[in-house]
Length: 515
Picture 1 (cartoon, rainbow, N blue to C red):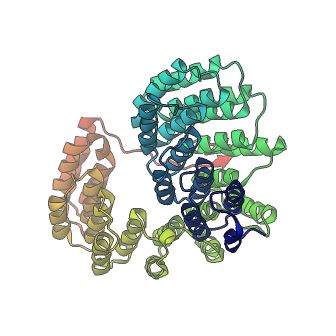
Picture 2: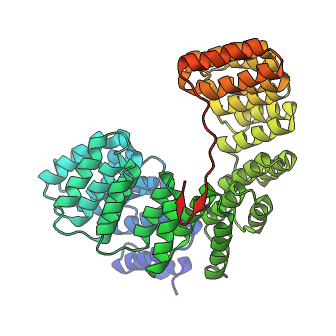
């Protein structure tokens, strides 16, 4: 049996001891056990042994402990390419994937005088890091592409697929990036399903749904990733009806959906307000994953769907039955309660969240938007201002314009129009039309037609395109105040600017389409 106590019987620095430690690292179950094993590596002279540290880094990556991985890596005096690749991979999985290039640049400097050279795995991990870092890292990705070609690594299907992914990830910023991704895809002598799925995701991320559908139709084989990518992409593009139609086709194709697929389908149900289908999906989830814990994100999607469909009791039941929760779970439920008129319950739930104290369930900036909205809806001004201060002092969250918008809305609803106006003047960020619109809402509630006129003129200066709805509100306010002359002035202003009141619309799901 492998155990730490059995190490005493082994001869120090021996190959047998090294093999024994390797097997123990392979069977490691916790970070606590790993730190003890690492100590044994150091004591027995193996802290610089590449094969053992590589195995140790693998566990750190799986555990998400990149800090410890970096500590172990720094102790190795002569790391080989495999160990460097593992460290690049570890950093890529962290919060700062762009830091992978620190190891790569160090490898290149060492490689000029030694044998430490990047290989295909190095470039694959770095390309993935570029894609994760986002469009701003495209120049580094393009430099890598040149080095890949000069080094003769560009014939690898794995690297070609990562190149497609890297360029596709930058397509939202630069249109030519999707063209480069398409060119690499077209020139691939061999394509696997991952290559097809990567190109498909690229088109959808760029917003080119027609090209994505053409590629999807041409795919020689579609797996559940292909279907899920297409469904999620349609939802993201505002084509939820098509997303549900694809889900129906997926089921007829005998491709079994997974939990990620269900998350995408539930998002479509939420967008369309299709409670009946959402409930069917919920029953499907309960049937197929009975006895197994669902992903937290799947339960979050169920809560979101029920909230969007107005079934707040169903949403709260899912919330209550969840064994594990995340910040998103709490935030979605708090926001749902607040928007459906249960402001006091939303604030009670937030206090429960605070008492929980878990790192994975800590309030974030979105949570505080939901909380401030609840305070606004219930008229709890003092509590709202207190939570605003807590957000800054206790949680270190820097207020965004949305938070200021909530405070302005809260003060305006309660009739404190002068205080709301003063806050707008002293805000550290430039107020937009949404901020002024919140103040205008208070003017409408409390019939302050003079201030309303000032606000609407300010909105016209800032964002003329957003003024139509606000002008209509002010016009109605003047009618309610019996000041029809002023009302007509604003109606004439709308005609002069060529502004028409936006037509009301509804979204109806029928036969897999939305109109």
